[in-house]
Length: 180
Ligand SMILES: [Ca+2]
Image (cartoon, rainbow, N blue to C red; front, side, top):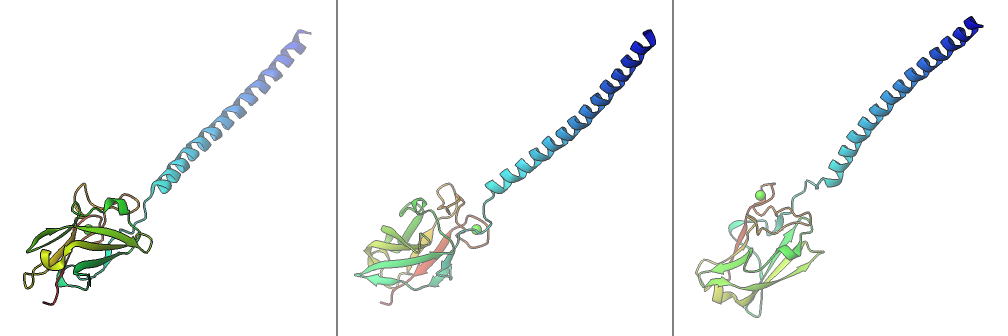
């Protein structure tokens, strides 16, 4: 009788040990899966926060710097068209703050309108072109200040690449002149 009890006890003890080992193996597997999931979640978060690599830059007029580019004159006011390669955030472009027109006649003021789904900026001066830029005085400089806190931004909150070097930021400047 005593030996039978001992035998039962021993086999139950072995079964408990076996189960315990199985539980530990499963726990290891669960731990590995939890760790893998954590890594996958981190990758997912990175992808969700990823910003497209294309930077917003003016693509027209192309000749930044001391070039005399095309414009339109409407009732004596200058109308300048600046095209971007992608949509930008129109609320971050402000005449007199980061979009500046100036010439020998001083700093002009103007208004901005948009077309092509906020990828084309149209700036119209409030003053006559010749008030800001008298004849033969060197033309009218149009600048979008892409440097600093007030830089205009694309729709992802990145500063525009005004100087077109491929990196966000930098001023865009073009000079316009009229034939007097
Ligand atoms: Ca740049």
